[in-house]
Length: 510
Image 1 (cartoon, rainbow, N blue to C red):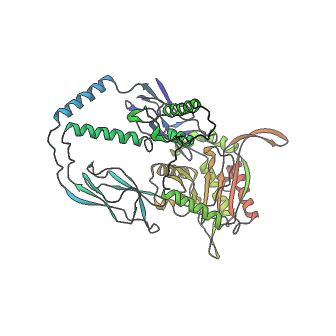
Image 2 (cartoon, rainbow, N blue to C red):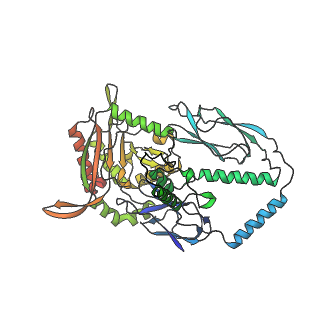
Image 3 (cartoon, rainbow, N blue to C red):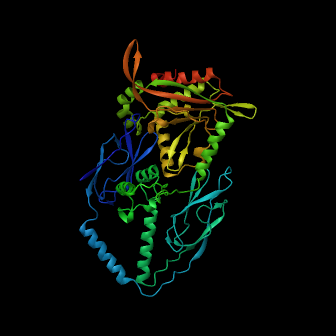
């Protein structure tokens, strides 16, 4: 019996929530398969199966609050039971016996166009990101056929009816326009069957080979993909021992050890050594989102007079408050009390006192905003995005926590819309969840400032002439010096510090 546990959480994160189970009790899983998502204040952590086996029992359901290294479920070693294997084999034999020897052509159905959705006004074109089906495959109504990627969001195109996938007119990577026809669907048609068992076996071999090839990219677990990237390896050269040839961490380590042994066995030579065959590189085009991020960051550096000022805050008062009222708060509001709601409330109050920070430059004019829309930097599988919390001055702590959770889940699942991402007068980014101790965040144009929160770390501080160990966090405010002077920037940061060190002022609005 093996335990599936909550990962070690960053120091600034006290607990987490079980967001989504991808498996159920009794399901067979393979090593490194993602079984559950654990959600913190800012990021969603993926928990993988530590070994092959069967999910024995799930101890915490979706929505439960858990702490670091708490047992989430138990895993029984091994794969399918003997009864399951026997049943599967029997079913396979029956299927083979029933398979006709003559080819059956698919029944022709009505041709339906697969079109690019209507794009937002600010988006001129899009890119075919991924086709999820191949010509000849059976599809069901509302099944996702293809992902269309724009500058900020991914649009899913679904089947309009049951049928068979026809021709694909635009391949992955192609640039397309709104309402352009990119494929054909034969509505009501049935897929063709193979002429013989030989062809079926050949197809199975081809599928297995394709699955093995996929294991070098999309099928890799995040931990294996990260290890391969860190070591600069080519996944196609690593032999996988997992299910369907899936590459595991042990496979990568064996490959590294094997490569090291080969290097050590090579005799020393006076002539320069030839370049090793393992020294490969992979070139892939940047995604639209990554190109947009790169362009905006470069624009911010080149078009603003950016300066960063720092301060630090004692987080003990907020940590004590959360510890005292966490259970009552969660029972009353149905949401966990995190740090981000305090950050948002403190920033909102500081923006009221320093309107220049809530303003932006438009040509030769300064535009002052009398509303408080705050962008929250969220890390997603596709890159960093900044969805917006609107009218933060009208929201309480529970409403802010719920809104942030909804945005984090949308970001994880790729469901953020253009409305979620447009606007925002100020940005908060929390690198502390990844362990960052200090950084200089880059402004998110056309905004004039961004606040960076960092890792909460115990440090020796002098309080009333005595040394105390306190949980301290660095604050970093990057701002456009063209509109915000040093006095306003320092005053803004000090205001946030004072509000966070005395959270009752946030609740009393003083």
